[in-house]
Amino acid sequence: MRAPLALAALSLVVVVALVTPAISQTPKTGGTLNITQREDLPQGFAIHETQTSSTVWPSMPCFNNLVIYDPAKKVESLDTIVGDLAEKWSWQENYRNLVFFLRKGVKWHDGQPFTSKDVKYTFDMIREAPDAPAKLRINPRKDWYANVQTIETPDANTVVFHLKRPQPSILMMLASGYSPIYAAHVPAANYRTGCVGTGPFKLKEWRKGEFVEYVKNPDYFVKGRPYLDGLKYVVIVERGTRTAALQSGAVDVPFPGETSKTQSEQLKKAVPQLVVTPVSENVNNNIIMNIKKPPFDNLKVRLAVSHAIDRRALIQAVYQGGGIIGAAMAPKPHAFWGLAEKDLGGLPGYGKAAEEKATAKKMMAELGYTPDKPLRVEMVTRAIPIYVDMASFVINELKQIGIEATLKQIETAQWHAMAVRGEYQIGANLTGLGADDPDG
Image (tube, rainbow, N blue to C red):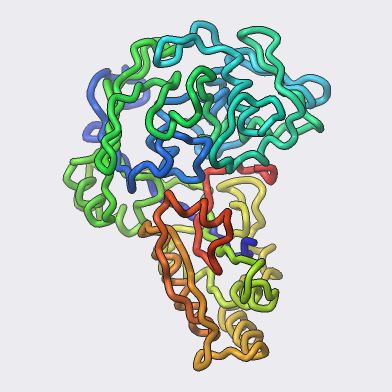
């Protein structure tokens, strides 16, 4: 269960630009972009077996989707979706059939032709169709495609998704960074250690714990692209070292969501040529509780946790004001579906902080726990600074109502399997990169 603690964090993406060309200027070709990677790739390049941007961020240059969100648009929506491997698409039968018309002449990095067979292979595997030719070791997004009845390939350049009911939002999930197309002739397990894609860059080398290096794909289907000769994702685990590398010019781009508001201001002051762009990354902070085991099988304990956490203070302490109050989804203008702050007042934990804390203390006292006689639990979180920051804040909040939590940090490669198996009591988590739609 996810407790109704959430905030949609507005993070800052910082890009080094020694010269910022006007839009009308002709782009220059050549060069290698050095990009920060906050940890080694937990699942290699196997995006369909991952739930983290630590895999998606350094893997996407190798891949293409059927459709993507226009990267030039600040807010992702149905209206900003553009073609990628699909040149165009059409809804039929009152939004029950979605037909994709694929690009012709596209090649995989090993020279094999891309066809509709690859699309069917990918999504039959994800939705675990009865006749799927392959199976994923971990399948985080099977539910995204539960409404797909069958996938048909009338010819090599056409794919039809037959749906059980109308679902326009499926396009938004197909546009996600979690929805690349795999090659049908490459075993799915191979993507854990290498990458054969159709994307603008081909994998040159993955030196584990150090870097991922790509070279330009000379056969990319968009003529004249990519402009760069290569990309290099440099693994820098320690937060201060990452910031220093960006400031010194050792890397050109930080990992998304890892540069705080305060850090970006300091960097801009130190290096005036840095370009700092605030963006809404649609990530929410949330507390997960195992409702199948004590003590969080008790509704009163779960409610006390939600009442205890001062969300406004969390935004100031952890994000230096670079966040907004929300529930499960981000509100307007950053997204579309989320509840506005004025509508959140009736939810546990969204009222006045002192009153919410008093309610939480009372509930715990009724269960026999106080700050002097606390309920002792273990809180897990991923071994990444921004996760530890949030977890540490929450631990302090819970201590004030009679819940004493010790923190255990889990490596990303083990995190999602641990959560699925239910091997935890309570956890501090960040959830993001999903489609801005209730179906996603």
